[in-house]
Image (tube, protein in one colour):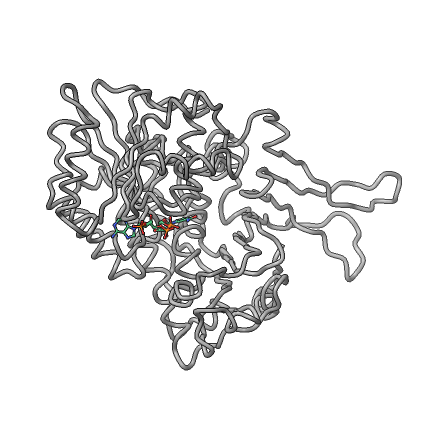
Amino acid sequence: MIEAAPDSNGSTTLVIFGASGDLTRRKLVPALASLHSKGRLPLDLQILGVARSDMDDEQFRAILAEFLGSEGMTKPSPEQWAALSSRIHYLHGDVTSLQDLEAVKDKLASIEGNGGSHNRLYYLSLAPSLYRSAMSGLGESRMSEDFDGWRRLVVEKPFGTDLTSARELNDVAHSVFREDQVFRIDHYLGKETVQNLLVFRFANAIFEPLWNRNYIDHVQITVSETLKIDERGDYYDQTGVLRDMFQNHLLQLLTLVAMEPPHAFEAEALRNEKVKVLNAIRRIRPDDVGRHAIPGQYRTYRDESGVSPESDTATYAAVRLHVDNWRWQGVPFYLRSGKALRNKSTEIIIQFRSPPHMLFPLADDEDIPANTLAIFVQPDEGFHLEFQTKTPEAELQMRTAELEFHYHEAFSGQAIPDAYERLLLDALNGDASLFTRSDEIEQAWSIVDPIIEGFSLPTAPRPYYYSEGSWGPVEADRFMLTDGRAWL
Ligand code: NDP
């Protein structure tokens, strides 16, 4: 259950830079409205949207009203929306202009009034190319100073395009804010099932003893999308699947599966353990990338607008990683993600080892499937545990059976909150557990960068084509077969 952010003595203002954009309309404001309708937003919260488009408060509120209740979020009643929207303001301004930031400061002073503390959460819902100047501007205009209340900064993904740019961005962020003020978003961490993975592992005594190389054969993590690149050809052709999905979401999921139990469910303890896993991941050398990673490209990708007709950008990748520590030695982690695939789903599959000795007679070509635990992050959040059972009456014939847990069935009537609800509330509450720390981001880039570099070498395999609606290139299946395994 999401707890209410405490009312503060004074005012709290959420300042959204990039307020006329897609994320604000589709996610941030609907999430705030959903929280408000559940009574979980502080009643003194003011919201100030800033972007260059010219509009007044009423026009801004009217645009926002169109998207309330979208994508599974709770729609506020007209009265609830009227109460919240009276606290939503808009100011047109360019985040790269110090003069405009001075105007934002004046506007904030008028919203905040006198007396008490004045807390501010700055949310950069801007194109990543603007993060740097936005952060510097907040410093130069002294909007980061926190003598009269806390100041926090939320930065959207992607944070950098490689290790060098992420380090530069971290340097700029740290020249203006302390690390504990910076909240880097990876919205996957706000998903209920992702958090439930920690509860599953660390609040149950029966799984943790098996959670290691002695009992687990390998781990598969799949994030598949059915969508192609939409209108985002220019962006995607420079980005590719490794930057878009692996550096953030897939590696985050891997760290949660592989991490040691933190001593407390608290930001620093949790993130320390995640960083240890990232540190322990064996780096793939660029000249060796062909042995560990398979690039793919959907067949019509080069015809998309904004994409170079000779583009070698990977829209799919399958990667084998190893976590070189005591717990995971010899256990491969297979990660795959792609666009234009058959299903939209995110799942983690833990495949356990086969029984050490088979009592039951099997035909020569028969093999008993090993136990698997599937963790579905989306859609249909839940867990499936597969095990062998005897078929009734048949003479010692076996069949795979499943124990299933589905969130929507177990908590029927209780909508699963959108990730942005959780993350906005946590940032308002100052809880950084589900946000990415600077060293975590840099470690993740240092894992992905050499693979991206390897894919661009003349000796590397060109992306293998795959048909839209398939499960990716057949080479990714062969890649698993050479390890004696298959995608599940
Ligand atoms: P949009 O392009 O839709 O919005 C960008 C916003 O920035 C607009 O409001 C634009 O408005 C404003 N803007 C541009 N230049 C300036 C400037 N100089 N000063 C002030 N405002 C400016 O992008 P999205 O909303 O889609 O994405 C925002 C961020 O969120 C990106 O980093 C993206 O990667 C990330 N993100 C987005 C997701 C989504 O679903 N949309 C999902 C996950 C992450 P105007 O032109 O009026 O100034």
